[in-house]
Amino acid sequence: MNIHDAPHLAPALEHATHALGLWIERTFGDVGLTQAEAHVLAYLARHPQAAINDLHTSFGHKRSTLTSILDRLEARGWVARGAHPASRRLVAVELTEAGQALGERISEAMRAVEERVRIHVGETAVVEMLALLRTLEEELR
Image 1: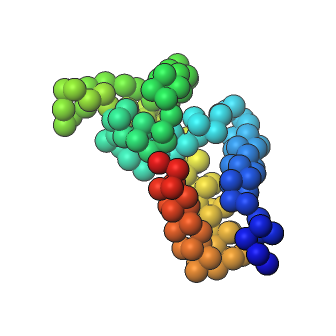
Image 2: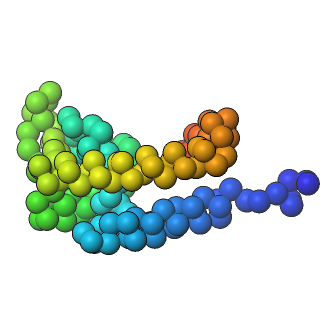
Image 3: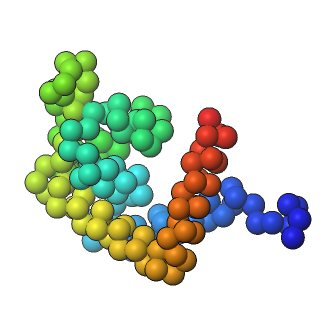
């Protein structure tokens, strides 16, 4: 197979991202989460001392988009914003008790999917895929 016959990375990544969004809708339809909201909740479940800047760095959303996501999560009682313990210039984002339970539920569901993929393709393929994604991200910066 020559390079012109090989599958293209960007469309495959777009399809996988779309499939993840649909899976989130099916799995968490009872709470009506968007993909972005689910990822933020899962991140906060893993990083309890997060600042808004950490979320911005991790996800790359426009600041206005991230603010809208946080506004929706806060309105639903899943996150609270306040002063960051490390710096007065930072805004902390913390999960509420309900948000923590949902964030852990999302994280566990994602880990289960990842485990099924690892079993299906093997650990070497997962490591290679992660390296490929890091390289793609670096090339796009």
